[in-house]
Amino acid sequence: MLTQQDYTSTYKPTWCPGCGNFGIHPATKKALAELNLPPHRVAMTFGIGCSSNGANFFKLYAFHSIHGRSLPVAVGIKLSNHDLTVIADAGDGDAYGEGVSHFVHTARGNIDITYLVHDNRLYSLTKGQMSPTSMKGMKTMSTPFGSLNEPFNPLAAAIINGATFVAQGFSGDINHLSGLIKQAIMHKGFALINILQVCTTFNKVNTFQWYKERIYKLEDAGHDAANYGKALAAAIKNHDKIPIGVLYQTSRPSYHQQLDQLREKPLVKQSAEEIDVNKSFDSYR
Ligand SMILES: Cc1ncc(C[n+]2csc(CCOP(=O)(O)OP(=O)(O)O)c2C)c(N)n1
Image 1 (cartoon, rainbow, N blue to C red):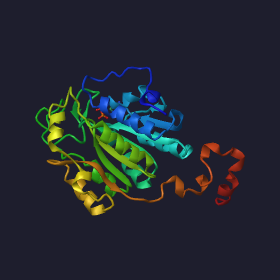
Image 2 (image 1 turned 180 degrees about the horizontal axis):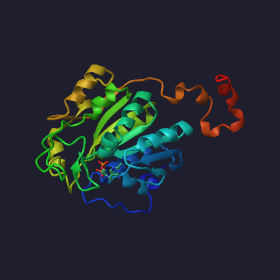
Image 3 (image 1 turned 120 degrees about the vertical axis):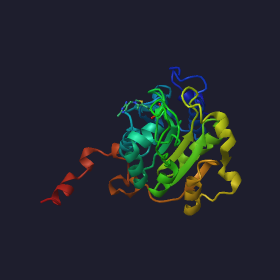
Image 4 (image 1 turned 60 degrees about the vertical axis):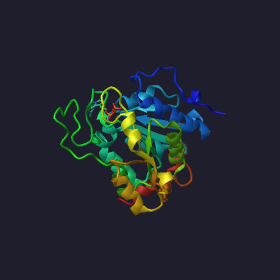
């Protein structure tokens, strides 16, 4: 029986007291343990940010990449060894700002990765600037008179760009979030979980209480996650009442399943002699 401790490194987290990451990490480890996935069968990639410092606090294959690049590293790992469970982890600035093009194109490819986005609606490591998900009018370190931008809608963007599993979780509900992470890992294809996360130091608007007053569970509302139109409608109505749970799930072959070269075994298990490069060269002759 695996426990959360089996995925925990000896480094102590440096986050502020009350940080939502203290909910997201146990939820992730609980999901991995309940799925009985040994640490050496799991690879996690991270960008740069408070959340991405998580690379140090997990005991499994962890890659601390650069800002906005958690996903491309995860894609490389998945296509090299698709037998591994691959989880990309990023902050909202990382995922929807610097890394937004990777987000869209990985969803289109339906690459079999779970994407955990810690959405605290700010760039927190750099001390609280506006991020793509900051609400319009939000006063931040970089917008002292209020943000003029409409917030980015990650749930709708994922659905319309081809993600096959789209969910939203809350850092303050570890059991519910852990259940979503389990479903996302088991799903064969690109799975986004946008995780609403409190930032006790810089975000004094979207607090635990603020979320508690607005959040409702889609499963309690009889939501049909197989219905594209209803999923999109739930994703768009993400303001006064905020849904958590699975918004959308569908089935479509993942990227590596469509590649002839990877049909029999992962790339990492193929020897150079087995790969007939002459075949490809012939097509240029
Ligand atoms: C290309 C690039 N731009 C900007 C930075 C500076 N930077 C480092 S962390 C960070 C904010 C991270 O915010 P987010 O991804 O939301 O994660 P959080 O810290 O909120 O968990 C920024 C802007 C950087 N390292 N690289």
